[in-house]
Amino acid sequence: MTSTAPTTHGPAPGRALSETGDPLLLTPGPLTTSRSVKEAMLHDWGSRDAGFIALNREVMQRLPEVVNAAASHVAVPMQGSGTFAVEAMLTTFVPPGGEVLVLINGAYGHRARRILEIAGRRSIVHETAEDTPPDLAAVERILAATPSITHVFAVHCETTSGILNPVGAIGALAARYGKRFLVDAMSAFGALPLDANAIHADAIAASSNKGIEGIPGLGFVIGRKTALAAAAGNATTLVLDLHDQWTVLEKTGQYRFTPPIHVIVAFHQALREFFAEGGQPGRGARYRQNCQVLVEGMRALGFRTLLPDALQAPIIVTFHMPPAPGFEFQRFYDGLKERGFVIYPGKLTVAPSFRIGCIGRLDPADMRAALGAVREVLASMQIAVPLAV
Ligand SMILES: *Cc1c(COP(=O)(O)O)cnc(C)c1O
Image (cartoon, rainbow, N blue to C red):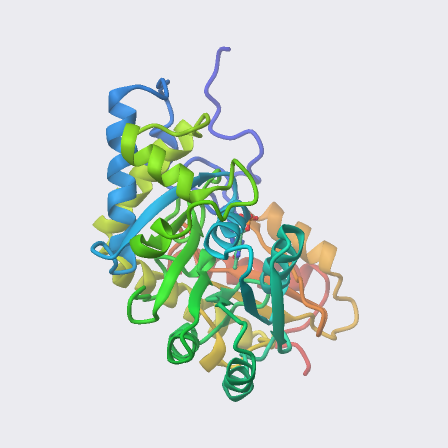
């Protein structure tokens, strides 16, 4: 190995770049991360290394603070992507005789239902369209009519559309009917205010590579200590047993199976940077500005958002595919990539769409640069702006 070229797959010189010369990821995770987060990985550690064990412990101690739950809840890590944490949460907290009311308005709600089905746990679904929050009156009717329900599951920000679900109101309803509340907070964790006790959550699942701006490879569940202690023996698999993971980590400081050490060390650095930015209020304010610049700029060009502003979480924005003749998504995507911006295809069933994320190591100037690139790419496709509606 000889040179240290700044980038191997970056765009042409003069285009937008991250601190390490890569295209900016306007996606819902993995995200653009800081140089210092990546540099934290330039070492080797043994998994029994005292330094690593102390660093992991610090990460797990600080995570519950993000949801104001340091006294009541503990963070239990789970190797793998965010879905591993969601599956670990559902299969550890829901006992064999349990039944879950699953609120669905996107792909992640469907995924939770599928996890329960495979694990042999009963579920009831309340589904609304991808641009529609759950109908709380209907949820209440189901809870009142179905005493066998033990748990309610909801997704905080459904990343499929970017919609913000009312987890506070859902948790309050669950509590009123004596049901336990489990939340997939993945893309909202650290970005939006969330108080585990105020929403009556027994468990909240998230991952290293979203609003905390670490690299992918570690999920975690912030679980109420009493509920976790009562979950012994519920698990349907060895690896995803959060109760076992928790008790072994408490006792020995060590993971049961090889931890993704570099991911955890990078996550430790990312969490430091998160708290240095002011924690959730600081990080959330930057994401909100990013989102506002993006939405205002795209609307000025004639694009339409799927969601009204009141339902839009400042995490990822879904835009309708413009009806303009000559607009081709693949050319649009490639043109933006050449200019240093990676966007995301749509995942909706209700309408053809694409998504642009506003989380990660990005600021409003990056969003303005992305809007400039959108204008250029439209011009290259001979499409006049503002788009005709
Ligand atoms: C990202 C995300 C997940 C986890 O996805 P992975 O690909 O497994 O990391 C789960 N739920 C939501 C709402 C998400 O945004």
